[in-house]
Image (cartoon, rainbow, N blue to C red; front, side):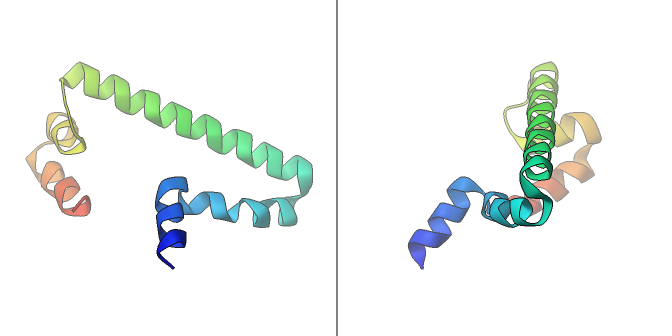
Length: 81
């Protein structure tokens, strides 16, 4: 339904897999997986933020152009459409 699709967009599809992770890995393994994924997401956001600040980029496309060149920026633009 539309509500489910909207919830998936807002929360992210990965969060809907959390119950299965805890089922398969248990409380300790699920908690550890959640902590590791959170740390990786935090690192990724900090890295993107720092790169955008250094290149004075306002979008993913500008960041790709500044760091990887025009070809990569075209690819990023195509993937974000």
